[in-house]
Image 1: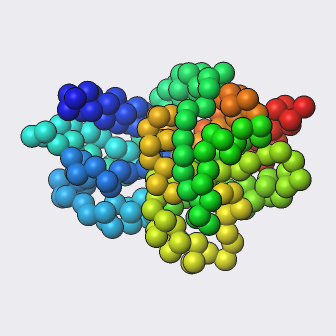
Image 2: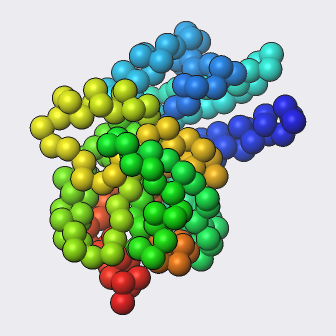
Length: 239
């Protein structure tokens, strides 16, 4: 069992390395240690500060096994390095996207910040738009005002907007207390089980699900035209 779990993490982080979009650090797994390029062990707060300062797009994860633990070395990318990894990411993203389109959305049960239980029963019969994000993902935060416009646009339609994140309820409450603008999606905390089922490793990631529970569209990364692209996907499912 331990070998299978270890293999899962190796495969997951191998995917992350080829990712130029923001990847979320995992603070819950005690078998993962984060280090700087110089070899210094980084605390949870130091990792969060690094992501907040440079933005997840510019942080690369490199992994290696050491005495049964996985060491994640965080490297700040320069422009040339980022361009190269972006090209690799485009290829891996296409494969991941293709593996999801047309598939049934997995079973899940999560809780929103206002205490509402959200599951497949909730989404049945509705077009569901999911935004996978996290607090220190700068592109994720940047697109929130546009996503709020999208919610307003479809407020009288059978469309459900969900924002799953691995963040805890406490961290999310603290985050939104510092912001003038809220997030009109239903924010779902402690969503790591769903992230693992879908193998989401790039942020932001948008998934559109039909009324029958089938994944019809996947959009990866920050896009200034996100409202238009998501609207097109939503309208196709509503018609």
